[in-house]
Image (cartoon, one colour):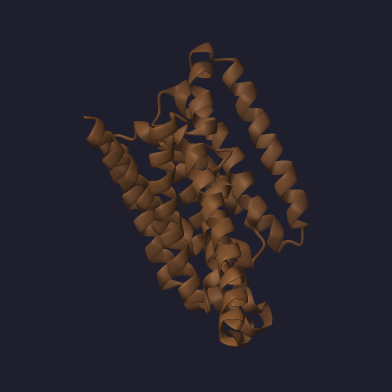
Length: 271
């Protein structure tokens, strides 16, 4: 049973990394880090509504996260300042979610698990949901890769290439909403953005091209999940935060090791 629990958690984290790796690269390139936080905060409202109405939590979080993503994309097209839109919608959705929970005492006790997540309680049904959702996002990113990359580099270049930057932006925000809905149970609403950003930021230290950075980000995500779970089992620490701690450690190593090697090589040549 214990081994099955760890195996399921590892597989869940690996599946999630398939989507968060390449998607996190675009989050960094487009400076959309705050969007992940905003969508995750909005998902709490979906959790509250789903628990209060006995609907599947995954469905509730997905619907609210998608509504948030589409609203942000629509307002951005109309010229609204992105940071203002995200600030208003993020905190409003979180506040609405917490207020809604206060009307349902039986829901209140469950909410903390959605704020902080618990990858160790992933069941077989959750595992299937995670792999299906992450697989769809990874396939979407792979399909739209060149268009997303061109739009990220320059919207003028995208227009010249016959692409619609607004449509590509919508693809990205919808993919982010799906990932938030998938990841909520694993790392919680407070740490989803970290799972998107830190592995991609680690890959940025080492990668020499966009595709290499995406592949490395997936690898850093999977290794972070494995190391975080081992730390959690060894030290009896919360699993979700332990995964992020491992990711932060890898980020530090990825930033430090290349610099040390660069200093050692000239010294060895002089010797």
